[in-house]
Image (cartoon, rainbow, N blue to C red; front, side):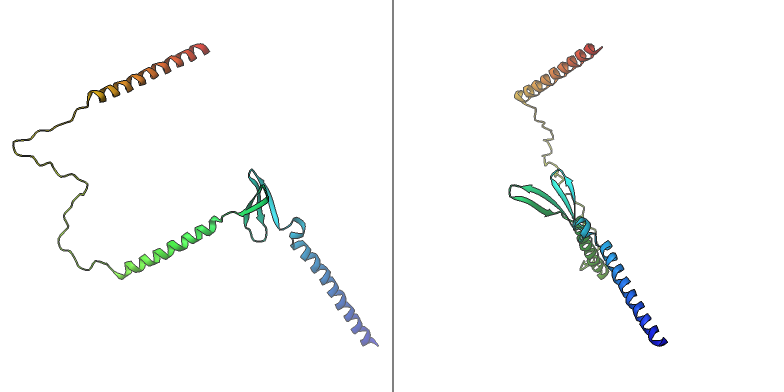
Length: 173
C-alpha cells in the first residue's frame, strides 16, 4: 500500500503546484498589463486641446475639438525624418567615394594653365589718345532739394526727441 500512497501524494503535489503556477501567472499577467488600469492612451492638456500618447506604439497625436467633434492628428516624428536624411547622405557619400576611387573624370591633361578672367570685371573704357577726361554726373537741383528736405525733417525730429527727454528728466527730479 505504501507505493500507492506515494504516487497519490506526488500526483496531488503536482496538481497543487500547477494550481499555484496558474494563479501566480494570472497575477503576473495582471501586473504587467497597465492597459486595464490606465488605458492605452495617456492624455496631457495643451493650449490647442489635448496631446495623446499611445502607450503601445509610442506615437503622439494632437487632438482638438471642432464643430463636429474631436479630431486627432499624428504629430510628425522628427526622428524618422532625421534617419531618412542620414540614410540619403550616407548613400551619397558612398556614391561619391566610388566616383573618387574610379579616378579623375578629365579626359586629357592640360599642359598650360588657363588664363584668369573675371566675367564680372568691367573692361577698361576705350578712349582716344587725346580724350582722357572723366565725367561725373552731378545731381540735379531736384535731387539736392529732396536730400535737404530729408535732412531738415531728421534734424527737427532729433531736436523734438531731445526736448521730450529733457522734459521727462526734469519732471522726475
